Image (cartoon, rainbow over all chains, first blue to last red; front, side, top):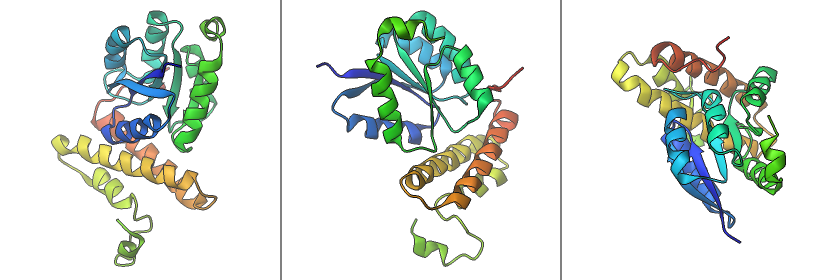
Length: 132
Length: 87
Protein backbone atom coordinates (compact mmCIF):
# COMPACT_ATOMS: atom_id res chain seq x y z
CA UNK A 1 0.00 0.00 0.00
CA UNK A 2 1.45 3.44 -0.90
CA UNK A 3 2.38 5.69 1.95
CA UNK A 4 0.11 8.61 2.75
CA UNK A 5 1.73 11.88 1.80
CA UNK A 6 1.77 14.59 4.45
CA UNK A 7 2.35 18.33 4.14
CA UNK A 8 3.60 19.67 7.46
CA UNK A 9 2.88 23.35 8.11
CA UNK A 10 4.39 25.10 11.13
CA UNK A 11 6.43 28.26 11.49
CA UNK A 12 8.73 26.71 14.08
CA UNK A 13 11.55 24.68 12.48
CA UNK A 14 12.20 22.68 15.65
CA UNK A 15 8.56 21.65 15.93
CA UNK A 16 8.53 20.70 12.23
CA UNK A 17 11.67 18.65 12.66
CA UNK A 18 10.37 16.74 15.67
CA UNK A 19 6.96 16.03 14.14
CA UNK A 20 8.60 15.00 10.85
CA UNK A 21 10.87 12.57 12.71
CA UNK A 22 7.99 11.01 14.66
CA UNK A 23 5.71 10.70 11.63
CA UNK A 24 8.43 9.16 9.49
CA UNK A 25 8.85 6.43 12.08
CA UNK A 26 5.40 5.24 11.01
CA UNK A 27 5.41 2.84 8.05
CA UNK A 28 2.28 4.26 6.43
CA UNK A 29 3.23 7.95 6.27
CA UNK A 30 5.80 10.08 4.51
CA UNK A 31 6.38 13.82 4.76
CA UNK A 32 6.14 15.08 1.19
CA UNK A 33 6.83 18.69 2.09
CA UNK A 34 7.03 21.38 4.72
CA UNK A 35 5.71 24.92 4.80
CA UNK A 36 6.39 27.73 7.26
CA UNK A 37 3.13 29.66 7.05
CA UNK A 38 -0.33 29.47 5.55
CA UNK A 39 0.55 31.17 2.27
CA UNK A 40 3.57 28.93 1.80
CA UNK A 41 1.29 25.93 2.45
CA UNK A 42 -1.20 26.99 -0.22
CA UNK A 43 1.58 27.48 -2.76
CA UNK A 44 3.21 24.14 -2.03
CA UNK A 45 0.00 22.11 -1.67
CA UNK A 46 -0.96 22.70 -5.28
CA UNK A 47 2.15 20.91 -6.51
CA UNK A 48 2.52 18.33 -3.74
CA UNK A 49 -1.13 17.24 -3.63
CA UNK A 50 -0.79 15.67 -0.18
CA UNK A 51 -3.28 13.24 1.34
CA UNK A 52 -3.06 15.05 4.66
CA UNK A 53 -2.11 18.53 5.81
CA UNK A 54 -1.01 19.08 9.39
CA UNK A 55 -1.60 22.76 9.94
CA UNK A 56 -0.45 25.03 12.75
CA UNK A 57 -2.80 27.81 13.76
CA UNK A 58 -0.62 30.76 14.77
CA UNK A 59 1.88 31.59 12.02
CA UNK A 60 3.26 34.72 10.40
CA UNK A 61 1.94 35.98 7.05
CA UNK A 62 -1.17 33.74 7.03
CA UNK A 63 -2.77 31.78 9.90
CA UNK A 64 -3.92 28.19 9.62
CA UNK A 65 -7.53 29.34 9.81
CA UNK A 66 -7.06 31.65 6.83
CA UNK A 67 -5.20 29.01 4.83
CA UNK A 68 -7.65 26.16 5.43
CA UNK A 69 -10.52 27.37 3.17
CA UNK A 70 -8.03 27.98 0.34
CA UNK A 71 -6.55 24.52 0.81
CA UNK A 72 -10.01 22.91 0.85
CA UNK A 73 -10.93 24.68 -2.37
CA UNK A 74 -7.66 23.63 -3.99
CA UNK A 75 -7.66 20.03 -2.74
CA UNK A 76 -11.17 19.01 -1.67
CA UNK A 77 -10.20 15.41 -0.85
CA UNK A 78 -7.18 16.30 1.29
CA UNK A 79 -7.69 15.91 5.01
CA UNK A 80 -6.67 18.81 7.24
CA UNK A 81 -5.75 18.56 10.91
CA UNK A 82 -5.24 21.71 12.95
CA UNK A 83 -2.29 21.00 15.24
CA UNK A 84 -2.22 23.75 17.83
CA UNK A 85 -1.73 24.72 21.45
CA UNK A 86 -4.86 26.84 21.26
CA UNK A 87 -7.86 25.04 22.74
CA UNK A 88 -11.49 25.81 23.41
CA UNK A 89 -14.85 26.20 21.75
CA UNK A 90 -13.92 29.30 19.79
CA UNK A 91 -11.05 27.50 18.07
CA UNK A 92 -13.34 24.53 17.37
CA UNK A 93 -16.04 26.79 15.91
CA UNK A 94 -13.66 28.70 13.68
CA UNK A 95 -11.84 25.56 12.59
CA UNK A 96 -15.10 23.89 11.61
CA UNK A 97 -16.16 26.99 9.68
CA UNK A 98 -12.81 26.98 7.86
CA UNK A 99 -13.33 23.40 6.71
CA UNK A 100 -10.77 21.81 9.01
CA UNK A 101 -11.55 18.15 9.67
CA UNK A 102 -10.03 17.70 13.12
CA UNK A 103 -8.11 19.48 15.85
CA UNK A 104 -5.27 17.87 17.80
CA UNK A 105 -3.66 19.65 20.72
CA UNK A 106 0.09 20.12 20.70
CA UNK A 107 -0.10 19.37 24.42
CA UNK A 108 -1.02 15.79 23.58
CA UNK A 109 1.49 13.18 22.49
CA UNK A 110 2.20 13.12 18.75
CA UNK A 111 0.89 9.54 18.78
CA UNK A 112 -2.60 11.09 19.13
CA UNK A 113 -1.96 13.10 15.99
CA UNK A 114 -1.02 9.94 14.11
CA UNK A 115 -4.13 8.09 15.35
CA UNK A 116 -6.32 11.01 14.26
CA UNK A 117 -4.60 11.10 10.87
CA UNK A 118 -5.23 7.38 10.28
CA UNK A 119 -8.86 7.77 11.32
CA UNK A 120 -9.43 10.68 8.93
CA UNK A 121 -7.65 8.97 6.05
CA UNK A 122 -9.85 5.91 6.52
CA UNK A 123 -12.97 8.04 5.92
CA UNK A 124 -14.41 8.16 2.43
CA UNK A 125 -13.52 11.20 0.27
CA UNK A 126 -17.22 12.04 -0.14
CA UNK A 127 -17.67 12.19 3.60
CA UNK A 128 -14.59 14.39 3.89
CA UNK A 129 -15.72 16.71 1.08
CA UNK A 130 -18.98 17.37 2.92
CA UNK A 131 -17.38 17.88 6.31
CA UNK A 132 -17.57 21.64 6.55
CA UNK B 1 19.60 20.46 30.17
CA UNK B 2 19.23 18.00 33.07
CA UNK B 3 17.36 17.94 36.34
CA UNK B 4 20.72 18.41 38.05
CA UNK B 5 21.08 21.80 36.38
CA UNK B 6 17.93 23.03 38.06
CA UNK B 7 19.39 22.52 41.52
CA UNK B 8 22.06 25.10 40.76
CA UNK B 9 19.52 27.87 40.30
CA UNK B 10 16.95 28.69 42.95
CA UNK B 11 14.80 30.70 40.55
CA UNK B 12 14.40 28.08 37.87
CA UNK B 13 11.28 26.06 38.64
CA UNK B 14 10.86 24.57 35.16
CA UNK B 15 14.37 23.91 33.86
CA UNK B 16 13.25 22.43 30.53
CA UNK B 17 11.84 25.67 29.21
CA UNK B 18 11.87 28.54 31.70
CA UNK B 19 15.22 30.02 30.65
CA UNK B 20 14.23 30.05 26.99
CA UNK B 21 10.87 31.58 27.85
CA UNK B 22 12.38 34.33 29.98
CA UNK B 23 14.97 35.08 27.29
CA UNK B 24 12.13 35.63 24.82
CA UNK B 25 10.15 37.84 27.19
CA UNK B 26 13.19 39.94 28.04
CA UNK B 27 14.61 40.22 24.51
CA UNK B 28 14.78 43.83 23.42
CA UNK B 29 16.44 43.40 20.04
CA UNK B 30 13.79 42.99 17.32
CA UNK B 31 16.32 41.16 15.14
CA UNK B 32 16.81 38.45 17.77
CA UNK B 33 13.28 38.30 19.12
CA UNK B 34 11.93 35.84 16.53
CA UNK B 35 14.75 33.39 17.30
CA UNK B 36 14.12 33.70 21.03
CA UNK B 37 10.40 33.13 20.63
CA UNK B 38 11.01 30.14 18.35
CA UNK B 39 13.44 28.66 20.89
CA UNK B 40 10.98 29.14 23.75
CA UNK B 41 8.11 27.70 21.72
CA UNK B 42 10.19 24.66 20.79
CA UNK B 43 11.21 24.09 24.42
CA UNK B 44 7.57 24.33 25.54
CA UNK B 45 6.49 21.89 22.82
CA UNK B 46 9.19 19.37 23.70
CA UNK B 47 8.29 19.57 27.39
CA UNK B 48 4.57 19.23 26.61
CA UNK B 49 5.35 16.07 24.68
CA UNK B 50 7.26 14.66 27.66
CA UNK B 51 4.47 15.56 30.09
CA UNK B 52 1.83 14.07 27.78
CA UNK B 53 3.38 10.66 28.37
CA UNK B 54 3.03 10.93 32.15
CA UNK B 55 0.28 11.55 34.68
CA UNK B 56 2.47 14.06 36.49
CA UNK B 57 3.06 17.73 35.94
CA UNK B 58 -0.39 19.30 36.08
CA UNK B 59 0.99 22.52 37.58
CA UNK B 60 3.70 22.65 34.94
CA UNK B 61 1.16 22.11 32.18
CA UNK B 62 -0.75 25.11 33.48
CA UNK B 63 2.48 27.11 33.55
CA UNK B 64 3.15 26.03 29.97
CA UNK B 65 -0.30 27.24 28.93
CA UNK B 66 0.33 30.60 30.58
CA UNK B 67 3.75 30.90 28.94
CA UNK B 68 2.26 30.00 25.55
CA UNK B 69 -0.33 32.77 25.88
CA UNK B 70 2.46 35.24 26.62
CA UNK B 71 4.40 34.11 23.54
CA UNK B 72 1.26 34.53 21.42
CA UNK B 73 0.95 38.11 22.61
CA UNK B 74 4.60 38.79 21.75
CA UNK B 75 4.14 37.23 18.30
CA UNK B 76 1.06 39.32 17.62
CA UNK B 77 2.21 42.63 19.08
CA UNK B 78 5.96 42.61 18.36
CA UNK B 79 6.39 40.23 15.43
CA UNK B 80 3.27 41.24 13.49
CA UNK B 81 1.76 37.76 13.36
CA UNK B 82 -1.84 37.94 12.14
CA UNK B 83 -4.51 37.48 14.80
CA UNK B 84 -6.21 34.11 14.30
CA UNK B 85 -9.19 35.23 16.37
CA UNK B 86 -9.99 38.45 14.57
CA UNK B 87 -13.68 39.29 14.76
